[in-house]
Length: 319
Image (cartoon, rainbow, N blue to C red; front, top):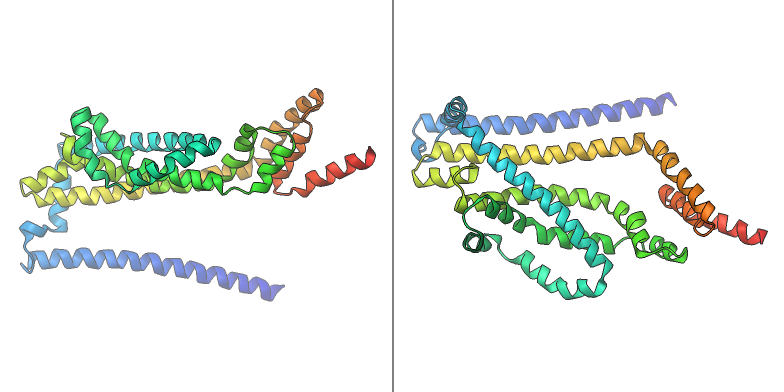
């Protein structure tokens, strides 16, 4: 037992050392890149006017912090990205559910969704400006257009690949399609939904920047296109760096939300089962029509369908 424990400790130590080496290597590569960039710019090996330098970018950022103009551009881009992301998440789940409900409708719309998902979204931006005008609504819709069609297709595919045995068990107990959706399909698709959200947040940011290129007077996208027109490379590179940081921050935020949700579910799992299933079982038992649904819920919750089958077999023997 002590030998196994020592092996475990050694394994954990090796894992920590591995993560430390990876993180230090990433940091070292970044430092070497920035240092080489700064040195070559100062020595004149590259044109500092075209390629700028890390020191110039930092000075540019600090000057915009002092006059507070950078917060306006950051805030507007962040607001438009989050709003388009929320719309994409809600609408894509709703449409995917509708398509799951109606197989005929999904077969009709499938080729259109595939074509719209394959269409370069930058081609839609000028059309949106003509239709809606150069305003913030156009930018938000441009951000949505990049992510929404792929999100619908991915979620619908996730809904249709759920274990058919669980859905058949719902129907065997005289359950409706609504019960199958709420008790099996949606809970089983939560990992796919969260994974889809991680992709959508980056795509929405891309779409918002495309919209800001053409229809904005503020925002990081506007700052990039304006600085390229007036040859202010410090502004342009600073905006690109800020976009990278914003994308990493939004992705990390969704990862944090995912971890908090998992911890909350695991922590309150027992309380939630008692709080939801005991009152539900009493109500269903009193109606004398749907008591097997409580057994089904327990089976699905614990991933053990045999619990229901054993109960059903005992009832038949008693009869």
